[in-house]
Image (cartoon, rainbow, N blue to C red; front, side):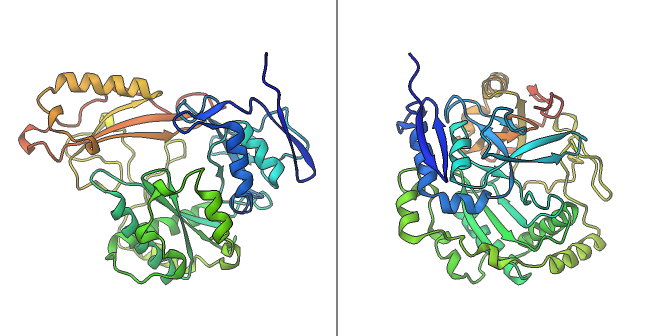
Length: 387
């Protein structure tokens, strides 16, 4: 017999939570209803980040340990209180995406299996002009969490020097995101140029800049401390640390001037996603499986670590199977790798996650390091159908 729905009264609407006791986090025993209640406990902060923004739905219908998928198009059957807006994509396709506006719509998307929220950096009222500049700090091989915190402090200083205020948040267990509110006067290409200028300036600086009060937690923060069990109490105690973000909108003029100086100095544009048309000033795009040993030709900043890529797969199981084949071919190399040398990354494709496996050969003597070879699994995440 099907479990009865739990009906909540929110923002003047009834929201039905289906299968409320369905377990989303098996090791912690967190259910779907627990997730809904968590988001309602921190609703002012959650809505501050997503309200009025189109949002792709990242749905974990089988719980946090299952494979999620991205749903761009809003479900056809949805309550009247759930708003949508039509977005256009580089492929020429369009989709009506969900726009969360209140607690009812927030609970509704969590009921669909959305554990984390993925809003666009634009408002539904103006889709052509982003009002957020985002800095994504994800660790590369050999970079531990303390170094991510150091880089975040550098990023805060860079943004401040260019008249912007950075607002940090942890991202999963290994990374950090920094958002800066900007005036909605620039198109996507210009905002991207400004973000590339931020990244280059971060690379040029030493991590010893002064901090402001909003960054006081960053030097000692631990992502493990921010859980579904701890964040509601923290939110009730200190409120929303990003509450003043909308009042801190800044200009991109300074960063765009820096971008122009970088371009004049001969620095190439950063790589664009493969589903975008080739851009003026962008370096050649080359798939890892087609790279020559003399260099990647991808235009990306090259890691100082001896890094090779083993697999790009549609599922994690397929990627891990490719790793097992690589291990069988290099039985004398594998024992030299430490757990931190094996990077298994969940990457976002058009409508679902795909998986990449890279190996850091820093603990392997140089003469014994395998070269970059054709991938054990060479899945193209951009070739499939768009949902």
